[in-house]
Image (cartoon, rainbow, N blue to C red; front, side, top):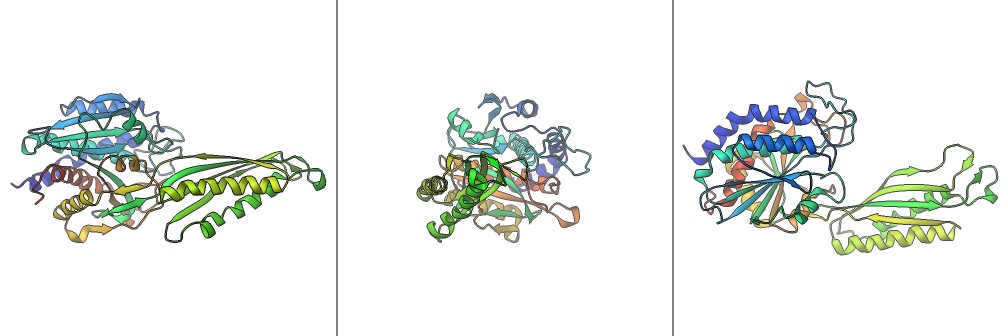
Length: 399
């Protein structure tokens, strides 16, 4: 039996158990940097495979090694994120979240279970490959400063340092059975913008006696659109959006201040930080001109994510041999953000998409929504493909 056939056989054999793992994690979600029980569960599953994990990396993260023959020859790292989102799950499924207001609405339960499933396959095949597979289970992908950055600081990419790194993420817009790749820049940087507009409150019927922070905030929000429409190079994708505005508690009372929250996305680091200066200058200048003031806080988040061409080409070739060319999808630029980006700036990396969409099963809703779910048939693909890509990254013979 060829190695490819053996991987497919094991993926089929372990799919049902991996689905059960996914459902357990889905039913017991934990928020970013609070994944204590999830980490314990992952560690226990690794020990069942004879793998002793290193726990407490960046507090709730863990790493582990699967060593083949000549383990120092080459190392590939496989990453999964473990945190959930502060969303109340609305789906009526048997494995619905037991933790009120917390939900695996971004597929991290799938990522974690798939990595455990891939590890199970790789343990079975460790006599058939050379090198080392490093497993990285990280906390806090959904929250600044990003668990990836903390894992790197804690030494997760050392001893041994990976020659390449792979990340797999669910994609409901891609049909189950298909996989998406993109070389080079793929996802945007993400920064959180917080503005506090200060004025002088009072009775709404006496506008001459107040400095209206709601009016000032309105002018600031409109004016800041020029950062994208008139300051950004049109060849450099940029997004500035505001999703929060809070000020006042009654229709006839002008408040003292208004708070605004937004996000800034870019694919160019030099422009990214230039834009921060422009946001600050415009917001402060308008507020001052209208008699108030504006405190600007830019919480710098994840950098842009870049897929190393060589690593991605090899991963795509492996996926093609595993699934067939007809099941490989070319991905467009995506202005969403992912803290896997931190790894991609340190190690040659490939972040690819696992199709989980199936209209007949109702699994085409976007991530971060209260009824998000996946077609669990994708899990067999996810565990087998991740193992196969890892084996190909370790081998000079990628046939």
